[in-house]
Length: 498
Image (tube, rainbow, N blue to C red):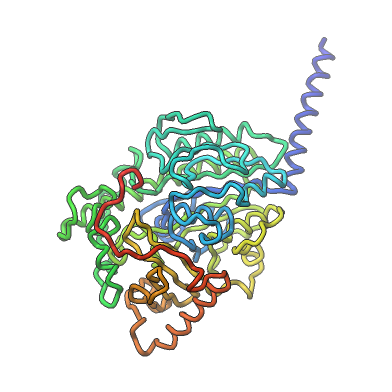
């Protein structure tokens, strides 16, 4: 009997070695992927991007052990279009998700689906938010756990694998992390894995968990100086001040009586920012838990960990809150990456875009590229440099009747300059004044140079360059379809879509 027992142990041991060997075979060939997406995350809300108040040691450690992109941007500063661009490598006019109410086309190729085709087991957990009323599993994923719409910071109703909505008690960020780790423990161990985590944080309405509700109480947060430097700017910016997306408006319910232009009403703005920062602290905790799980299971060094935000956020700059515009706080995003094929402790100054995520992940995982995409892999650029890396790109946003506080936008950003146009939408002359900024001399975009004769040739050059970039994508004055700009409205958005 004892000999039989020893033989059984030997068999079990050999099986264990085979499993480990299989994992190592995959490990030597194909890295795992942990993709972490935050919603409305400003780079300056992270320690590694220079925050003076928000301590994010786990995200900072990730940056220190990998690559931090100092100049990363979204091509449309709005949740659903940007998420679709991240997955597909396409601009919004190509993938078709132009607003927060449009489904990601089921047949649209995306990088998790391509990894699945190439032998990965794939999972998605968290905020999906492409289509307000659909929480069903989506193509390209072996496991899918999400909810309808924005979700709630507490007690969200989750639909796991299509089993139907069921409330899971607890704080959203913690629940997402629990679900992610549970899936990793139960996954098919014969294959490499790719897991996407979609956080709600730090999207409005900013609700920190209890332990972080008062961390920033003593930190004074004034309106930014640019909120009061609107001379020479388009009139629509001034009109936005008292709306849902202005600093004198309701501030996502942090201000109950509005509009309020009193100086002392800045306290509501300060409370809003404190709430925003508090939700980021929980995200950092989540990143720490995920990294520790990977370390403890021996998977960290064979896992590409990619952390980023879907779009930027205006926190009072130019008198605005929310996003959508082409101003720097609205379009800047953090991207941090660590793992096989990447250098350690490197800061990359080149301009990278949301549309570069798909080709870069597939390149790092040795998977076939997606067809006809507009983004580029930055694998070679971050390792050895790339003299042909982009020097300019264009930004697009279409006026939304549900949120009538931002015009149509077509903009160009180079390494130094930015020009923003505001088309009417019917082919007639632009509805609003053009904005032109020298980002090297004026990074806060305080002085609009569009009407300065000294910069007339620069403006003409950038306008021509923007026209050429759009035309290269088939977007001309006849083919670039957009809604008619009906102007800035004072009405509040419908309660269910805020």
